[in-house]
Length: 291
Length: 284
Image (tube, rainbow over all chains, first blue to last red; front, side, top):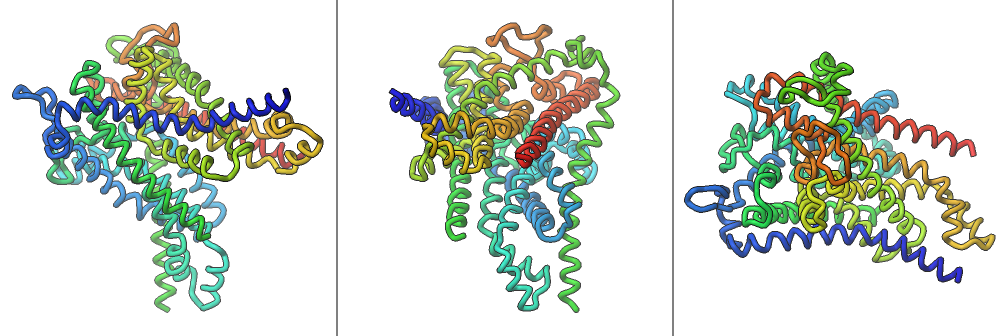
């Protein structure tokens, strides 16, 4: 009897462990199920080959996803231009240069930055960064691609910094000591020994930060102006995949083509972030095995 | 000599990066506090909005966020705890536990708006909960699951193996061991980590946009199936959707301040708990 009870308890916890897999698969299945009618009615080719997204057009609705995908990628790319150098440099500073006092200020700073809700950062995009961009570049208003990139850069920064720092501090001491022993100074050791040894961890952190940036909604929704056309330059207003879902899902009746099309956008977004995370996971895994 | 200069300028650049990060956080907080503080008074905290949100307070939004966070916790904390107990106490190092861990990491990377879509399809439509506290809370609960499960596992890992082996050697079963020798030591740590996840959930907007958050409800939600006002959504409305944005800007700033203070307070609680718990643990 006791053994049976133990077995049931074990089963119970196992089910809870498996639940995470159910949720992940559940999300995927629901997205596919709700995208399928959209692909059937719009046509897979039309969906992926057109840049025109205008579900309420008089001449018939247009569901082309290209402009959104391009917008998401371009904003994310801009964010990485900001967050990668800043994040990796801060990580190197924390683990290799800063004294314990500075460390004790910077590490919580990064944790708090990670905790600031995205809607607050979006608000900052409207009230601080937007007007700043407009003034510096002499534009009418500053809700555009750069604004989104700056915000996403700030959002990706904590992920990149803290994971890069883990990777940099994990570099074995003997490598550094060997480098010092050969007469290299701290900077040379950092650049030619520590960073290269930590590179896979740093790349994994960048991928994770990127995944986070592609999937971020509120900051881009509030700060990029949301014009659905294909952006031509970094001062253009644009509308990402996440923003499109956020703007339109509240307005469409359930179970219409438009409703399903938004799930299709969600499905593409899910697959994109899934792949980015998977690559980061594989890199990290390999790195741990080598260690 | 030149490599000495290289090091000097190199370290200078790294220091600059650290300073920029510090400045960013400092400026965000400075801007919000300096422009939001003057609008905050007792009425702002304790009254509903009036006159198309240009006057009054944000009381229903504070309460709504509190309610939805409680539901999130009810979903996410037990599921995370139980899942972590399986991973750390029962599962052998094999394909299954690797798969679960991979699922956890991938779930953590799913965009919040995709959780919103999932919540609409599953809770609002399929379970027919409608847009409600419960739909939003469940959605946020599943979203926070990777955080609570990881945090709980970390806490279980800090319990020394000797505690388990001693109990097992005395003839206790696995579950008796977990119940009497592992959980009492791990639960404070589990709570701390979970609270940090909840702080994040309390500030989320995208998953609740369509699962239950409402533009304006003058009274408080009276059942788990009512719609609700929430602080992050309220800030979004005030910042972008209001018909008179410049008039409500001070209120938007004040709302942002309340939201940030709330999130930081939750975080601080967790950190204080962590320090207290660590000291207690070290004394043993």
